Amino acid sequence: MPPPSGFRYQERADGTVLITHHGRAAGTLRGGRAARFLAEVTAGDPQLVMARWTGAYKHGNERTARSHPRNRR
Image (cartoon, rainbow, N blue to C red; front, side, top):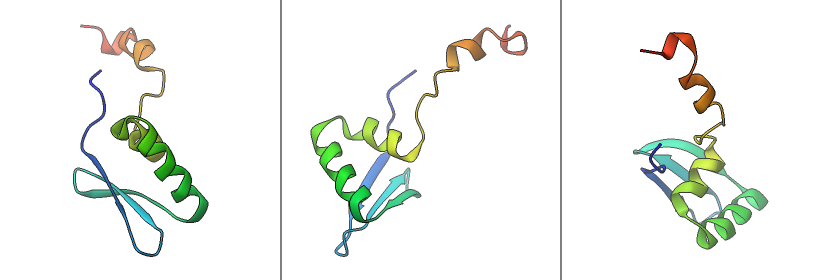
């Protein structure tokens, strides 16, 4: 699976962080959560961090789903 892409974040003057994915709002963080996000996004891979914070990341069942009978070809 390719790494996540298309995420952007915008820090607003009131301390709110808006995360978008391909131009559409994916999440809004305020207060302490926004501060933790900003600290983490500067320390790691921004795309992966934003995907994890918005919930749009691998859930661990992709390999199991691939071998399910309806997904076999």
